[in-house]
Image 1 (cartoon, helix red, strand yellow):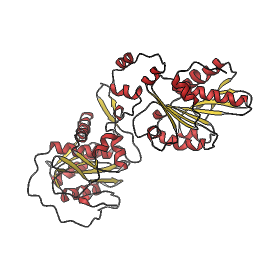
Image 2 (cartoon, helix red, strand yellow):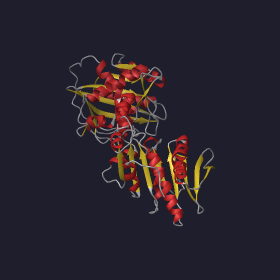
Image 3 (cartoon, one colour):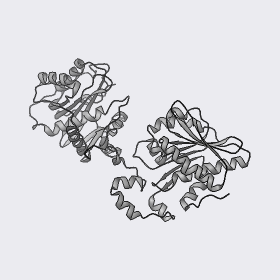
Image 4 (cartoon, helix red, strand yellow):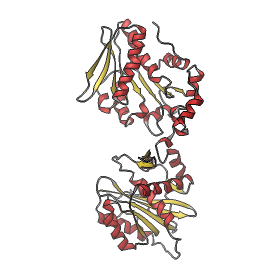
Length: 443
């Protein structure tokens, strides 16, 4: 049995029979072509030996699933000269499986669009095609792993990178991974015989970040995330939140009435560095309770300026906060696209300059900061978006961005402030988790 001519890196990948195998390859280097060939050869070998083999390809979309069948599975079977039957079978109410049946014993290869619900109930060898680009690939992973629990089943995970923090990044970087890992950059592929003009491709791409991710197989957060994990890591400090030193404080507050979080960020300036002393999170809390918590912050700290989200539901509480604490100290901020970009840029620049210190190990804060994505707007200018989740809607991000912006807009700090005596570490509201209020850690 002979297959198509393969380049050296493809032959190395095919020769690896590990049960768990992952391939991170450059774009257009043939990762789907090679992996579907492995499935075809496995099925034909099983049929010849009187066994049955089943493979399922999970693709990022229905079109990609069909492409994997037409330009992978069927192409190989025709080149080998093997007989097969191709058909579409209903998978659920609105999904089809593209299926190729081979031999007389019931062996098949099928390709479907990836969803957590479609993975359950299967017991097949699996190919996760372009896995880093599957929506919510962690949930898909949770649903899929039991599918290959039988020791005779194989799992193949192939993709180009798509930033850090997802499941594919873990598979390719974890030091104790069970996976046999194959990395093929465009330079590796060309060195092994792939006919490509690298300089021409690079000039045509004309985007260093996209080139690094798509062709050099680098995990580049900057391709999508406004605040990459490396940047967040650089601002985390084991000494944060630390004890309040009595210095000038700047506050950001992002309001919410239901669903999302109301978040208050409290930054103290020590020298030229802003320390996050408190991050107060309130869910499903009345405006009266939210304002009472802001009153406490204004009373306990030397607040020079507070920037509050005045958009939509924030109109009334901002007006009340200005009445209580003065329109000079409390600024209402309308979240226009231009103002959001200005605030997000101020936050990013503070982090790049290491002028912001954040508590280490706060998973919710890290995920929230990383959730804001940069996309191109209709005019080509950057636009910032974030998916809504159970943890909120980038509410911590915007509270911090408001606080950093307040520190830039504020007048010089006044002298003579005397902090109130230390009080017992007891939150004002049972549903107000916070850490670090004046050095205490609240449950």
